[in-house]
Image (cartoon, rainbow, N blue to C red; front, side, top):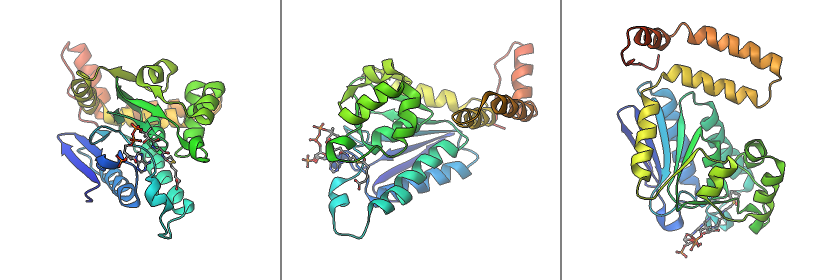
Length: 259
Ligand code: T3D
């Protein structure tokens, strides 16, 4: 694994920490490949039942490393989009386990959109978000143009992407861009509580919930109802469904296995 990433597994939780703090954890090619490898590892590892993505130091992620983007290294926009950001976003949406963005500081450009693509985004009160792309003549990538209108509506998505104003974590929560804000003092504990809780839940059911939510972004009602029926039949055959119902009837806490 690369020095640009800290990848740790603690029990059923995998922590992926972007680790270029001096450059606000902006993405170079090495870090992008390390993130992809870590996500692929998490997808395969049955012991991992929740994934946390965060940043080292003061920032979450400032998007593309603009020094590397301008370097004469043969790496073009095509490489950066097709080999870095698009695979990361696809993995985040395809991995059938909860992925939580723990936004510890500023999130800009692709860094912001990666946070919005995660299943749940918890931000520190002092964190902030900016699309940033329009300030340097670019267009939103990393699925910003896909998720933003769906999360906050067309007008606000237009304002966010065209004006690139920095918004606070509180504003992001009020707009529906992120799940929750925790005070700076309580952030670490709140993050821990959230990922630990998710890691003990019925992972298979959560994974299929994710599949249903992904599909709802393009399905019509009829198709979505059919998919829900199909997934519910599968969920109803799981170990965790049996355990959940028995625990309820026996008035005890369920012990889910994620299967
Ligand atoms: O090839 C392509 O570009 C295609 C891919 C596009 C995907 C994208 O993500 S495009 C968008 C790229 N990101 C940006 O445009 C954001 C640039 N950064 C900023 O606007 C600001 O740094 C922040 C709003 C993120 C934070 O502002 P502030 O005032 O808190 O911090 P700062 O002083 O600007 O930055 C701190 C350090 O991080 C600084 O280094 P220094 O001066 O202390 O040595 C700064 O240069 C460095 N840094 C921040 N962002 C980047 C960066 N270095 C390289 N690339 C960055 N994106």
